Length: 611
Image (cartoon, rainbow, N blue to C red; front, side, top):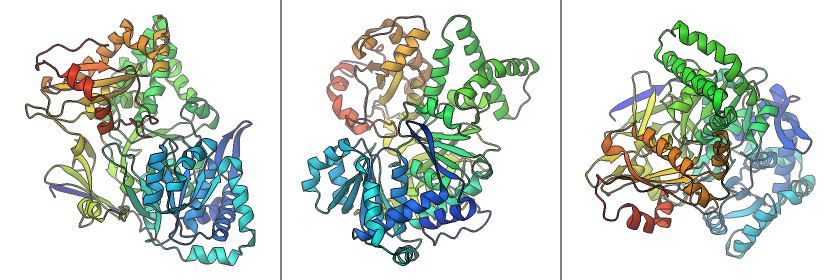
């Protein structure tokens, strides 16, 4: 290894216990206080820690009654909701294995996962999910029981458990140890076919306890509240679910990102976890609300002041008096209203899943809501690095979690070693041998580590573009910058073995119309109209030019094409964390790329018309 850095534990962590013990500890500490809150038609409903535990025990007994044995796989296919959480805990508590499936997965994807992990029982959210499973149920060799949550599945399972004694339940719980398999989580497959990651109870326990040592002021103490909107099938979101149970946090669960701002205003979180696209949407919503004219100019200046203040703060310098005065002025007129729109109590945001644009990070930092960028993998059950609340550094993914060693190998790849590293890849020993070497998990990400242990990512090995001229380019910087535009949904940079760099760009029709109206222009009625709209085209040009200003000429986007459709999870072009599935996108638009972007061109050709 070129360089290694270990962040020591502040106190030892005993990982030889099971996930149910984390819930038991919460009940012992704060049993009568809220643990979970969820949205209903009447507003936010509350479940105490004791009520959650009672439901978990009842469901566990039902699973035992239905013949679920230690090691059996049970799937959950549902949006984020409280039933997901208690089912997950119930399955793992008795030594069975939770297999989460994204609610957006196709029937074919569901069949593959259920067969690969030998799922014997599945819990489905509603009739839509049941229809998907019904299409392939006859092809699922191990699947016996299917229960639908909206049809009263939890009530049914609880009734089954009435005949199971407390002693039988406790004996099953006591037999579950830290090195036992807890869950098989399938990767989103952004760079290939999804693989099942085997994670143990000990992996989960360590991540919870290490997280507490990393950011205690976020999760310990009175009135700590986390709002979770990401799908619980994703390892990062699910890890934060366990983290909330193991700390003092009240866990707010919402199944839709569409109502996030309204949910934040009523739930009033003290910190939020989201992917960068969510923070970009919040910023764009504030910008569009300001509109044009005097209010728009004031907002733009307030953004500039916030970013300037943040950069000086990050450099450890002294803020000039004039800038300080403007910052104080905008705090009351611009910054505090944005904070109130987020519920008024947000102290920190944690961003992960994709690179965070520096401009967005500096803006939020400048208005008093630091976005602590972190990093994790499905293979580590969530975060392995996060910025500290004191001394955080924008542009890095922070320090390794306590008890974890990070390193950069001879080829510049980030490697991880620690008790959070998974057991292996399900049914793929050859991948396990290749990806986990002498205890080191090979992440596939390129980066550097400074002397204080802060990690900076520079690209991803599988996504590095090597142009025909031999230039190595990481697309992440360009894509992140372009996507900061309020009208742009996705940007995917291309150019591997090609003469120059190009990009495929998609629009968000709703956001584009809001932006048009904020600019005093008429909205458009369709995606086709949006692509042809000269105002939108000019904004896309601006975003591309701004991104190109961050890189050398050889790395810049020479041509781009705005597509008349967005990438979606439903069409298989987008992962649940809003990252394009590069291989699938390339296949879908192969003719456009070959015949329109790269036909009869040279590296000096002007950009294609934006249409």
